[in-house]
Image (tube, rainbow, N blue to C red):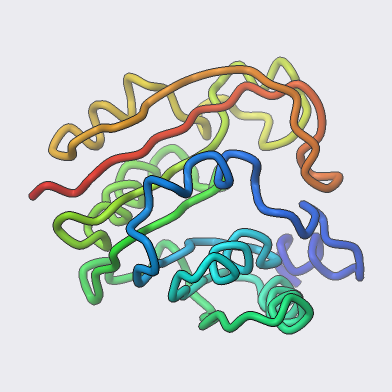
Length: 200
């Protein structure tokens, strides 16, 4: 059993069933009703929320246990989401482009693969489309309220400015707030929001 299947194997939703607070805050930047990809969505909380707001949502995850719970959550909430099993490291990001691409807390990506995955998110975004990325900064390791223990798995403003230098950056902000998102993310957290438009 892969570690994510193990984490998602209980009936409880590890990160809760409500969307990430940052997604609620940033969703108005997305193209309304757009064809939207939610990457590594786990148990479905973010994809279900976007579907409830009228977006045409495709969501991916590597964990079959997570996808099963995501499908159940979509049924409970009365929305339709196209869920697909996907290995984020073996994906042709240019195969299809979306109006919106959303990646929330994908901090499992190791440092040596991070740049290629982050660039892939941009490649999956249509020209004129929106990319939303939300996660932890290295300061999160000291706070210890969620995420991995290696600061190299986290994002910084400088890193995202560099990775997405060919995008029109609308937001690239580091901050600290208290969040309560299931038992997986709970307490004072060091966060970063990125919103960019694919202008090329």
